[in-house]
Amino acid sequence: MKRNTKNILSWVFLIGILFLMASPFDTKILGNAPKELTYSKFMKAVSSGDVKEVYMRNTSSKITGVLADGKIFSTITPDDAKMVEKLLDNDVEIKVDAGDSGWGYLVSALIQWFPFLLLIGLMIYSARQMQGGGKGGFGGGAFGIGKSRAKMFQPKKVKVTFADVAGIDEAKQELEEIVDFLKAPQKYKRLGGKIPRGMLLVGDPGNGKTLLAKAIAGEAGVPFFSISGSDFVEVFVGVGASRVRDIFETAKKNSPCIIFIDEIDAVGRRRDSGRGGNDEREQTLNQLLVEMDGFDENQGVIVLAATNRADILDPALLRPGRFDRRITVQYPDMNGREKILTVHTKDVPLSPDVNLKTIARGTPGFSGAELANLVNEAALLAARGDKLAVAMKDFELAKDKVIMGAERKSMSMTDEEKRNTAYHESGHALIALLVPQSDPIHKVTIIPRGGALGMVVRLPEKDKVSVTKTELLSNIRVSLGGRAAEEIFFGKENITTGASSDLKQATDVAKKMVIKWGMSDKIGLRTFYDSDGYYMDASDQISQETSQIIDSEVKKLIEEAYTEVKELIMKNKEKLERIALSLLEHETLTGDEVKLIFEGKELKKEEPIEDSLDDFKMGGLPTGDE
Ligand code: ADP
Ligand code: ZN
Image 1: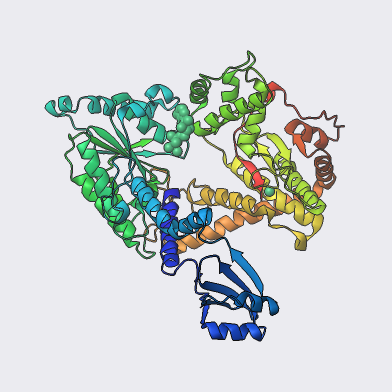
Image 2: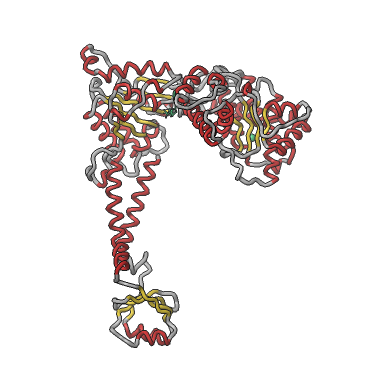
């Protein structure tokens, strides 16, 4: 996406420069052309006081200036000794330019040549960019647009190996075969072994799909070409397709090797989705299909593609001989998290108190990338404190930053907004304490973080494989607690926009209960998700009547929950208020502190807030409010 934008920008820039060049740079600036005056007209204008100022150059007979009405004019003057006198008599402001002498000349020459220089620079730059670092030169049509920008890494450059990939052993095992094949394609060919040409790595971002692809190249010592699906989708029709052609061509010349296509959904989305075709994307996709079919499976080119939306891919992409092998890259479990933390703390000095197992236990739901980020943030914190090693405390603080985003203390909230937020978050917190099977509260804060004004973070106590219906219903209630508190304390007409992500969360859960998990009596034990867990929303899958029932069931779930939440808040109004007031005073409360206040006990708060290490728990989704 980024490179795409850059490309468009360069074009806009280029066109702009051509536009400027079309007119002599020093006189006409974007259509503000000066009026040409004869010398006599000019002198007349001077006499009648119509000239405000003139610009003269030492050696030039050309004068430009400004008339009383603001218009720019220019004129050619003879060698008239009295002219200056006359100008002075008529109060004309005279400005003399050092003109053609020395630096002045150089500068004006530079100004004149600047657009050309810029243009040439730009041409070289874009040619380099688009040809993907490899050979220089200007091949491949205008600025090498058609050349693929796939980055070619020489075997040395990919230093990633399987040792750098932790915690996703199943995916790793499946891919080890590919490494063997890439190391000795001939051997496989002789034995008649069939290696898939294309493999799809499916999983949420940050779980190591790119890392795995690189590790294969690194292990096998083969070149790695990588490109993102969004790079294929270009402004100009046909560019994407030719890019696909080029990358495959180059790859075949460099086989054995790996082509990695990130975000393949950007180009491989289902073609029949109805909402008006995108010619460019379709052409690109077709070209990709042609290329996938067009090489021999033992040629030694393996195409790996990554996506987190396998459900929207065009079925043609998944046919045998194309991306017919699917490898799921999942969130790591507790052991996996510990291994990933071990990999990432390999070169980080740790204090003796650091226990990676404890951290792993406290990070359910973290992706590999988030764990890497956690280690990095902790190391930064320790460095900022001039410490020699990273302590558990640093991990503790880093985790809040990773879960909730950085604090934005600078963001100024009015007192009213602060109060609203305090009651809103207290609403979530109160309901979390009242409903059954809710994950325990980790923290409640009204310090803005990331995009949220405040948030309640609840953390599961351990990795969850499944969730009960009660728990889901409780989650819906907790999500609605914020809005309900606002309505009860400040009135229906004063509710704020702060609940939109809460409502989305509640709606998502309710919807999935109905259409995915068979938890609505009216819909019954049916699911509208395919075997990969993706929603099938095409009209041939769900009848209109069923759709209507789904809608009304979702609505009912949410409405019932909201009514109940309001009742709960009404019954516990003072408790909620106590939490809110304490939040206004301290800004952040831990789960235990909220519980104390809820039970009416006195809160002895030490500043700054420090969790005990046993309390090191995280994961789960914060209830953020924008
Ligand atoms: P994806 O391609 O699935 O979005 P990436 O491979 O780009 O994820 O992962 C981003 C970063 O997160 C990696 O560079 C690595 O530092 C870290 N990471 C993710 N998964 C793992 C893992 N299983 N083991 C070690 N590090 C990981
Ligand atoms: Zn909220």
